[in-house]
Amino acid sequence: MLLIYTHKKSNRLLYTLEFIFKEHFKVPYQVTANALEFKNYLGPKLNYSMEDFNIETFDVFPVLLMFQGDVTEHKIDVSEWDGVKIFYKVSKGDLPFDIIAATFFMISRYEEYLYANRDRFGRYDTRNSLAWKNNFLYEPVVNIWLNRFGEMLTEKFPDFKIEKPQYEFIPTIDIDNAFAYVHKGFLRTTGGILMNMLKTRFHNFGRRLKVLLGMQKDPYDTYEKINEIHQKNNLKPHIFFLLGNYGGYDRALSPLNKHFRKLVQSYTDIAQVGMHASYASYSDKRRLQEEAQHLDEIVGHDIISNRFHFVKFDMPDSLNNLIEIGIRNEFSMGYASRSGFRAGYAGSFKFFDLRKNISTNLRIFPFQLMDATLRFYAKHTPDLAFDKCKEIIDKIKSVNGTLITVWHNESLSGIAPWKGWDELYEKVVSYAVNSD
Image (tube, rainbow, N blue to C red; front, side, top):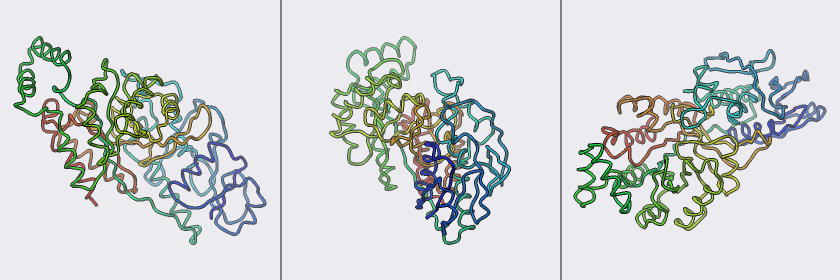
């Protein structure tokens, strides 16, 4: 067992130590503020304090962040250590920076509580982030830090065994719009036809008419292909269904629609069904609760996972709303505008509420790759998008992290704006599963 000494057992510190040693390293540890107990302990020891014990310890010199109770804007200088970006640099200890504070800063999303610019959808803007400003958004820095930390600990204490993390791939599919043309009801169908005619979109009008007449399959009905790809690779994906009221950025079918209900129910055995909380519900707990209840009723059990539509959420209010309605897994932690590592970590972790200064049982699952990011923000061709995916996947594999992708049923449709993208997902999944 590893004994860790600190002069103060703060909530921030205890949370981060649990993340590092229990969740990432999977090793037994104990925290003490008793200096005599620490000195007399005969096993491996980590000193997280300014004390100099003059005994065999692994020393991490702390910065003040871990012992504060508020969120304050402060200057952070980013430097480099052995080819990886670091911050909270210190002048003594076995590491050149406070790895515990830096890890906490990243996974708590400390910077997102501070005043920051928002994008046009009101989301935290990527360009605010320390990672973007200092060119490490595309690196799983926390995984790299911790893996090297583990190696250094075992070098100092050869009998101390750390369990190396294992690479994992979790594919996720968002169903924003279950069908392009069918099962929409008279008003929405008629409105769609009139809009096509008014805007002279005759190619859409012709396709819509063929689909409505049963001459052609609905282009967003790509579920057979989605199922085939996952089953071929022995994967059980997470499928997130949008159930919000129609309007604004929400285009969901009614939860009473029998075709939509049948679709959702078809995934109860072959996927993990989750809620795709509507754009309108990110700050409205009542709406959130209603959407969760509708989905619970359709699948016949409590839904425990969520991703917010447009990945629009606020720290910490949106996440606390999820906790209050019984959600246990959250999949929105990623940027819509950039691929990469929003929290710096390829893997899951518990949500720490900085406002209340407490750890919670809501588990955050960050994603790194999304089809809409590659197509609309990066404006990649399918070939360039695949190259970017391979780059991110290779980095996650190199640190034995967890890859989470976000795709949509409509991006496999093969119609504009997704022409040529219908085979990309299959290639990405195959590379994620089979590449070394």
